[in-house]
Picture 1 (cartoon, rainbow, N blue to C red):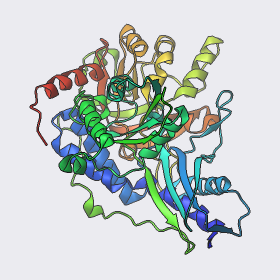
Picture 2 (cartoon, one colour):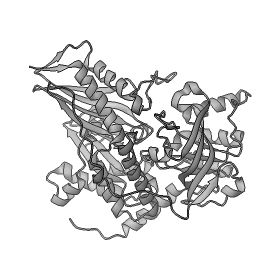
Picture 3 (tube, helix red, strand yellow):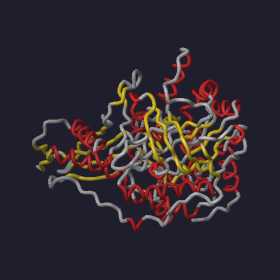
Picture 4 (cartoon, rainbow, N blue to C red):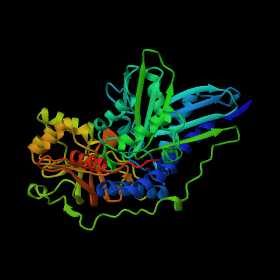
Length: 508
């Protein structure tokens, strides 16, 4: 029997979560670096350059890759010959103790994003617990743990269906990608589960995302079975869609496609897909009774020599003096560098603002959107000498239903967020001659370096969803929807899908 100490398990969970908060898996960095090298779309290449630069910065300073530090998912395999020494908790309690310790670590505080009472008050649990834990009892004398921190933007794009046995899995999967938008922050990895039952397919898709990126090696040696054939076919067909990094149009949308399958009922074909975003975070470790797991940091020399800088011709914008006449001149796809005061607000703040206005009440002191911009963000708390922690954008489509009310009632003229806007959002932007600007998801620490001061001005009880006022200097953004309602997330992928269709197919 192997004796595993409770505290060793808790500390290993905590150390693993801290580690993955600032170190990308090196297979992801290498795959993204190769995609960056091959990318021909200037917008997509710029976005990948920001993500790679952000990755190196986070590794150097040990700060989160993304402001959304995720909900924790753990796959725990406990050997039958394991004995828990001095344990006073169940294994799930131990995992949660590790999560709590990791997310409240003073030198690298991670954002608490988990809310209880999900169908009601949605109150933040304040320590990111509970985790979602999956168990298996297996032969052996070790505890095997695969753990991930999954961001909401990518998790929200998960899909599941029950196909007929004769239906084509590839067709269904590929047809989902254009409808998923860019809120999952491509390029990333697509996990697919096939078979079992509805819940088993979803579990297989999530578990597949823990695997090593090996698409280049697979293509080089060729497929050995039907699953590997499917992986290659889906990979090629998705990238042929031209969605590209951040949905801006380009050659690479997915870096790999992972598939796990399981026997199913003769009348069924369950299929699930779950994407991993540009903030891919997961790690695997074992405990054998010898103590706390150890994690070896990557060598900074192994990171690609990519150091993003804004384009020399980027337009400088003073947010304190910008006018409607100014924003009418901005063109879709144009790079801007924002300086001045920028208010923030996410889902909960938007709802509260519009509820106040509907009751005829005034907005809190310090919250004046007239002629101003709002940034969709929920930042990480600052540490050491920071004014704010990593502060990348959240998915903008979640704010679409609030956009008409905000533009009509507050005097707001512009928004900054992640990925595309939906039809309702674009219609409101066009109607009010406003603009929507896109910051790169997965470059949160890089973006935070442009924030020179930060203070909460309203709704402090909402935690990371409170309204802040940022003072920014040369914050990089792209004009995603102009005052006429033209969207780069529509024109970019369409252009690159056409271009990719004209590239001769290379035989492997």
